[in-house]
Length: 252
Ligand code: ADP
Ligand code: MG
Ligand code: MG
Image (tube, rainbow, N blue to C red):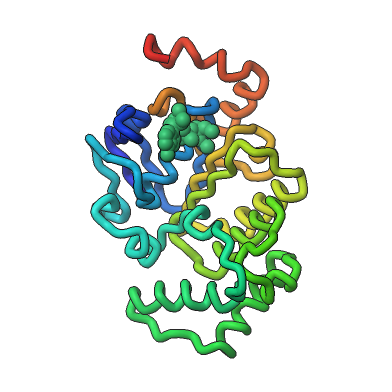
């Protein structure tokens, strides 16, 4: 599904990703962990097509297509969901309206008919129920005045409505409270399916108490330096990132 080969990326002429390799198959949940400043968010941003990143080497294929050649909207239309594509506050724009626009853009790109507001509302009510989300989310402005936890819930809601093939969630290093973590985990678990993959980027092991990843990677100094099963996350929890330092090489 996703194949990243020897990816090198720069930010403001500084190399941040230094030959990153990653292979994600359909249905798999991959966790990417790593110390602060390792390049985790940079990876997410590069995959989303954010401005400000220069790819100097390597390739990213999504279902056989050159992802890096596509505009962010085209990536979304193909079924790549990046949580931070939609975290912005859009005061005055109703969440439901915003999501319907996003979904219909995606459907149009896939040659499917648009949903009218009645059909969309029906869909949204089902999702809200399955995910046990408060339906007050619907009427509010996009992320307007949302707490960190509410933004995370909204992210999961967006994910459920857009039903991407590949979802990339960057939990950022800022402390999410345990309820927000659980909401993210419950959402991911509810949306797991044999043809949907997840990349969950996280600095902390505790999220992985609730989401059982198939594969855990350690990203350090711009590369994947270790790959294993869920037990790798526990080893990191026990020993810290210093434990992995000797694998990073002299540049770290
Ligand atoms: P992580 O998410 O693993 O903590 P980041 O990808 O956010 O790491 O950052 C990796 C490195 O790239 C850091 O040293 C950070 O300061 C730098 N960096 C990331 N984005 C930018 C940017 N937009 N401008 C300047 N430096 C950046
Ligand atoms: Mg950071
Ligand atoms: Mg980060």
